[in-house]
Length: 121
View 1 (spheres, rainbow, N blue to C red):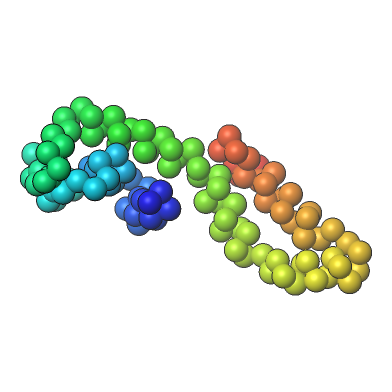
View 2: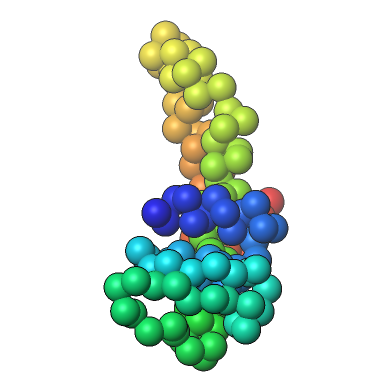
């Protein structure tokens, strides 16, 4: 579910909303909502779980946004990893006894540190 939720947040330009919060913390509940306002949520849950308060939803939105923002380095690394021709680099390394692939990976990790201070040139 986290990967799907992360993909949804990315599609919303990295902005977490009410729908993301409900899908994250209140999994399996039933509701209809426009995703814009708390009052726009019609709670239909048949499991008798009470509708979360607006404050509970806002707390979850804040938590999810922080979690998403803290993984910016990983998204940046992934796009650069995808741009590498890794199979070719690994093949060249085994044929030529080089560390081209390892060096490329280290360079990307250095450029995008886990503390999100990147890019470090």
